[in-house]
Length: 320
Image (cartoon, rainbow, N blue to C red; front, side):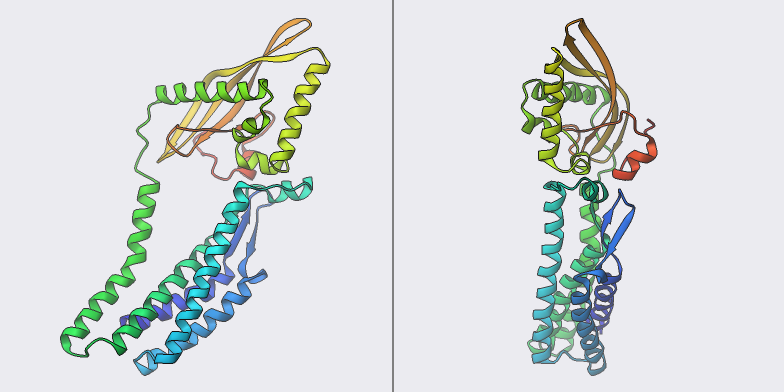
């Protein structure tokens, strides 16, 4: 009974996932829902699984042949959801669009929760079907056998809840143990390395220090490298060059689990025909590994609302 009710629940969630956001575009504040594209396919499959789950509930048994067919369809949905999620993850890190309008609108794309609901529903449907098939056709129908199946069913249903809980806990520990002094030391080193890469015209390395949402909004890595080269060449044509880029000070910081965000002041020294000039710029520094590595977003000329537009995770505790 527990298995069949659980199957109905997860098949319903799988069907509803097509009406949930699959992709979110923060720049345009728009979501792409599953039913607009491939979600039609997944909704058809899960409708079939849903009908099967109702029939299995009424018969109080998982039929042999049809259960095997449903298991196969569930495996297809697992692969479908996995390929969609990994494909979007690749697109997040390797975004490269030459059209500036398209790049600005789609930069910083995020995976919608609908795809995760689809993945969990597909996996759980397969596991429930597998356990149900095994218990109905291979397990002794004695009281002891039924009790073992009942306990296994409860454990199976609780498994995704425990997985999500522990996954979230591991990804988001209560607090980061890194001190403010350690943050400043780490940022001093990273800003210096980023500055050196630009001074040495190592544009490949320089791009890696820029946060991917900025890179995406400007059209991808190649476009950012081109812009950096044009900026350096522009200074050279005026008889000037960048002498040094360094950390001025850490103005604000916020620690949430393994992620650290900090607003810093970056000092850039330019050597020209009339001597040295120095300018200070505000930057947002983001680390997702407790300060081991950092990505940067230039805040010059940007408002709090504009930053939230392409970087929704911007900490509300930080003020520009």
